[in-house]
Structure formats: C-alpha cells, structure tokens
Length: 214
Ligand code: SF4
Ligand code: SF4
Image 1 (tube, rainbow, N blue to C red):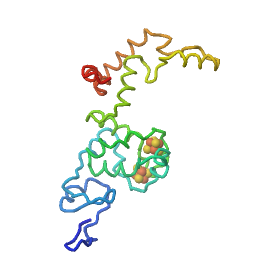
Image 2 (cartoon, protein in one colour):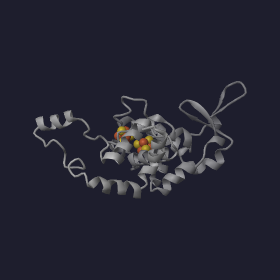
Image 3 (spheres, helix red, strand yellow):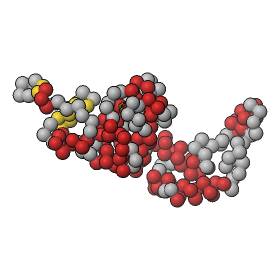
Image 4 (spheres, rainbow, N blue to C red):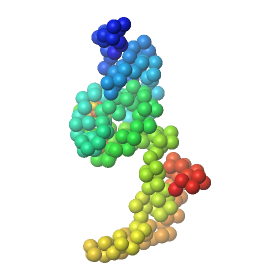
C-alpha cells in the first residue's frame, strides 16, 4: 500500500499476495504487515526458497486464512501469531523472523499442521525457522542452557537434586529413570551423536564455555 501526497492510500498499489515469486515485480510498491508499511525493496524470496529446498515447498501455497493462528494454544496466551510469522517468512523478512522472540513460543503441538487447509506442515516450518534462528545466533539464553545440559548430562532437564528422586519413589517409581541416569556409559554415545550432527556447534557449546556464559 502506498501513501499518496496528502497521506491518502492508493488502492491500486495494495498487494496482499503471499506468493513470493512475485517479489521481483514488487520493488516499486509498499506492503502492509503488522499495520506497518514495508517498502518492496526490503523484501525478498530467499527465505522462502530456503524453506522450499528444505522440503517445505507447500508453504508457498499459504492463503493467509489464519486457521493456524486461530488453532494455536500458545497464541491464545501470548503475542505469538503463526499466520503473521508465515507471512513475514514468505515476504523474506529474514532478520525480523529469525530474531523474533515469539518464534520460541510455539509448543510444537502440531494443531496448526492438522488443521491447515493447504496441508502445510506449519510446525515443521516453525522448527526450520528456529534452526535458522540458532544458526544466526538468536537462540535464547534459556534454550542454550537447556541444550548445554543435554550435552553435559544426556538430559535437557536432568535429575540433579535428591528431591526429584524422592518424588519418583513416592510415586512408586525407581529413584532414577532408565536413561543416561541409570546407564552413564550411554552419555558418551549421546555426545558422539551430538558431535556428528554438529548440535554442539549449533548451540555454540564450546564458544559459550570459553566465554564463561554457561
Ligand atoms: S492455516 Fe495454513 S493456509 Fe492458513 S494461514 Fe496458516 S499456514 Fe497459511
Ligand atoms: S504447533 Fe506451534 S504454532 Fe502450531 S498450533 Fe501448536 S503451538 Fe501453535
């Protein structure tokens, strides 16, 4: 949408498409998102292309119906809006999407994926964007800490206090679960997998340790 000389809106230039293949023709127009005007020169198709290459090609068929947002249990209680995030991703607002803290409010429940009328795997798209966000260095400190715990103990939330074992016993369970806690030798295997998949690099493990951030 463009603003005319007197501040009036020129309807002829209003675009609501989400198909980013149209982007090269958008350079002279302005888009509306979040009630903001975004110049066409600031948008691009690179992010949508990356998503397509990652197997999320159906994302391009999003019709911005809002079913994902309407179904989202997280969005009911937070500022997270699934449809808005998808639109921004399709418009190629890479930095804005990857740096958005709301990206981390999705609980990956999968409801949006089940209900999307275009059969888009929305949850998978959110996870993909989170991976890019980590690679770009936007991982939240809380999530990084949890990842480091996984590397160090084999558990994102380890039983590191006697009280948890006591609670387990009160519930009729063994003091420790049948995981790395009971089989400490398995930790080496987990750490090997983490190294092979470069998860340690993704969560900046060594660098954070060196900086004393953990
Ligand atoms: S439900 Fe599917 S088609 Fe509708 S806005 Fe969400 S991703 Fe797009
Ligand atoms: S998977 Fe995430 S975005 Fe989709 S409905 Fe659940 S919380 Fe919302």
